[in-house]
Every structure is written in C-alpha cells, then in structure tokens.
Image (cartoon, rainbow, N blue to C red; front, top):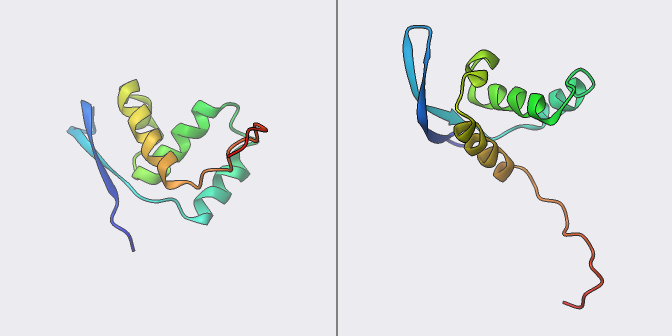
Length: 96
C-alpha cells in the first residue's frame, strides 16, 4: 500500500474543535473512479465532482472541503490529477 501524499494547507481550517493544517491524499483506486462515474449523474458540475473526489481521497467530510481556501483546494486537485493517467496528446498534424 502506498503512503498518502501529505499537503500542508496555506490556510488552516477550524473544524470540530481542531485546526486542520495538513491533509493526507491517497492515490485513487478503481472503485473510487467508479463511484465518481456513478455519481456524476447526480453531481452537476466539475467543481462538485472535484470536491467529492477530494473528500473521498483525503477522508475529510465534504463540509471541510467546502471551508477550504481555494488555493489549497487547487493544490489538492493538482495532486489528485497527478495520480490519474494522462490521455494522449491531441493530434496536431505536426511531424515529431
């Protein structure tokens, strides 16, 4: 099992009597991707999907993610994106 990526928050979040100053982000499993795909019909936009995925992979409630500074949410989103396979580059017709 891989160790979660730890990210220090630029803006701590006060939640349930504690200050959250860093979060662990685990690598997604296929079951996580399947759950996101299943729930995509109920989740109207990419932000909501990103919040749901961040909550799932950090083991934090969605309410905590909602209180997160936008810069910290973007950093978490970048870490998550780095865990996912990147698609092929679009064809441009240019020779390599």
